[in-house]
Length: 513
Image (cartoon, rainbow, N blue to C red; front, side):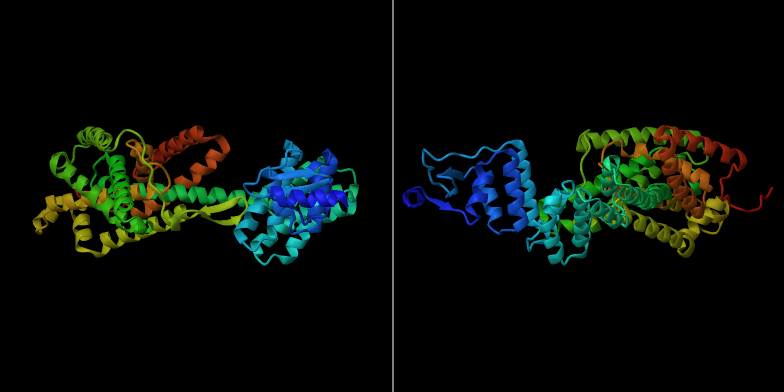
């Protein structure tokens, strides 16, 4: 009786409150010994007491005191009594508390909280949490979270002392395709002694491995198509300036860079003057990157290249010099360091098909964008007056001039078109990496490889060569590494050119003496 009176006086004077947990459990969690504290925590967690979460958070914050054999919580701002003991928390106990809080968060009404809790518990499949996990599973309505909870429950059963539970858990996990699940099964398999459970685990490991292998193959194929779409975008502009006009434009990579920096400039303008519309900046960046690169290309053609048609070595040297000028100009305007172009929110994230297969939205957008640019180019060259004049000047410049075509104007427009498409490629590349003065140098050689391999002047050949080189490059990288893959591709190109000097899809026609 006297102890109760003293305790009541302490509660009133020092702002302390007794906790709703059973007194014995609360005191064991707060001030027990080692294993006994953990056991008490697990017992309270299995009961699913709603007051456990606030109590554990108060314990983490140092607001719990032990007085007269009872755990008391100190109110915010209150001074603890001098004779009350503060519980000690070692690293093990802190981990147990964090894990228990995550388990309790599985019962939250907020899906984001439950998702975070599942991520915390993914590597902590403890059989002691099975009652709580099963309770959370029964209440879960989200299909994705329910699947994760099922896997977590099965993982907890894998650590059970009952061999039949471990066998059942392995059978349940065999239907998944998660690398973490496979790693957990391999870990448990190494220590498994029961023959039936061991056989079930071995089968589950094999089944999950087969599904992961398909995911890895699909990821490799998508990576190859993604790289191929980038190469296609880069090479489409070169297919006009080199394929149709015969100009070896070593500054083509710098035209990509111009488009990328135009995108960066539009982004900065939106960030400064229209932050609320930032997610829409890309719709203005696309025409801006095209126009910026097209204007630079037109200036190059009118000032230098127009005097060098039919002289490939001179155009190579001249455009290489122009590329150096453009790089230095960008360094002077924007600095030598890379600049970051941020994806709009609708291009962030990815589409998760399997645990080891995620298709990023920005890569999917580039695939679709490359297809649209290709269709636009094909229609422009085959269905418009400009395309007709470009093809006429390319095939027979003198005859085109004789029928009234302004060949100089067509040359400028065609070169500007090829340069503008390079600018669009730079805009696309800015969405998958940093933008810097050396951006174009990473793609110029591959772009020439695509155009030469596909056949000079052939859009269809450019498509097949771009996508084919992208997929083949990723296959070789997975087999022999990036450096040897590049060497192998160069050797392949040499062999193809030896057999087919005009490329895989050479233009067909007759020569007239």
